[in-house]
Length: 342
Image (cartoon, rainbow, N blue to C red; front, top):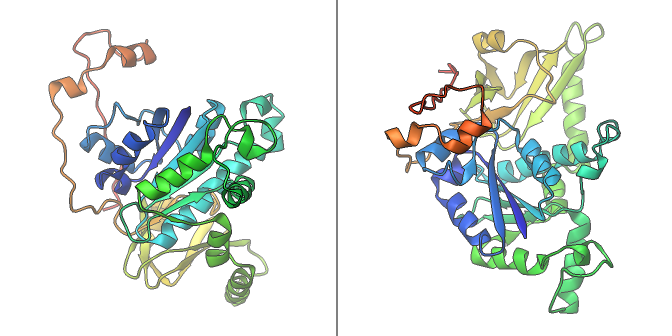
């Protein structure tokens, strides 16, 4: 079995759970890991896991999922350690939604990519392992329905045949899913529960009405184009990062970003840092990356001092970047963070 693992954020690495889960998964098949996002890169280096988790590509989590799909993984895992159950589960919902849009985008698929994708590949999120609220979420709802029916029928073996999605898999999904759930002491959360808890139609409708009333109070409402985006799982007095730039801080457990003609002009339940907005410039609220709080706050972080052997370019890397690096046998790698939010 070919297992793809997307590791997101420093928390899952700093806590040691990424390595533990990867080791467990290696008992089920061949495990291939890559980073999703940016902030986990330093954590991977500090943990000495560069040879385990690929940090060479700069991909969003949904893009990392999509790449494993193209590589025909049998199952894909998303490992995350959100600061709260809400942030982690909402994050998973957003990632899977973007991922599935990429798979079902007809314009994209029309460019001869359709055969590359298989929407029935299971995607499983492991969220906040080690916590009482640690959860495992299978984001394929059709597969979940079939799994539940299988559990009720007490069948001993699943994963072979072609009768339905569950039986068409080349491995025992029930054994894998339930085994991880038990081994990691996780609670099972369904996509329907995530949607009901955080994206219910009633709550969304009430929020939209409230925000719309606020927008209508602006003097230029009729002549300008306003958009907004609600951010879940925020805590009071946290910095608000947009694309790595601090643009303000929160005053409540949720915030709403409001943009006029692409420029953020207001933060409901937040205080704006205008210099940050000046640096940010115009944005598309649907595409920006929003984070709040400390980006890396583990008490167990021990920055790693790299040795000469750590930074020398390996033969595999020399072949990968042939023509882009020096042929000198003493060539070495340099990583830097171009960031000045503080």
